[in-house]
Image (cartoon, rainbow, N blue to C red; front, side, top):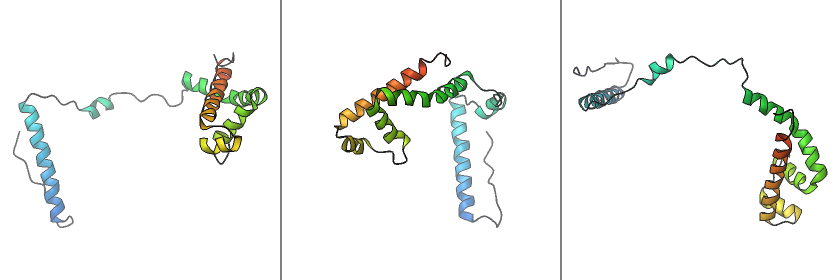
Length: 140
């Protein structure tokens, strides 16, 4: 490679910044020379990415459609959970749907349960909601 050419910025840029910038540029040139001497290949990813077409933004993927349908089924699933498992519904609503978003410890104190029981019932409630939502015929 050729000898490094020092870059002068003029009076607008402080001298110490100019010196530091040129040190970094020279080091980069040295590293490239060293890699070339050891026959290392560098891929210019920016050039590769410029040739990749952008995906169309106006089309909606199949997974987005499925998630939208599942989101629309959530209120029905919550109603079913409320009717069949009221404690699990209350835990879910206090934990995720309320403004306070109570912690596991606060839920345990509120419902006189142990922390493990609260964690188990929250997990069970999530599984019940998932099972109900994914079992719907209009989701598939």
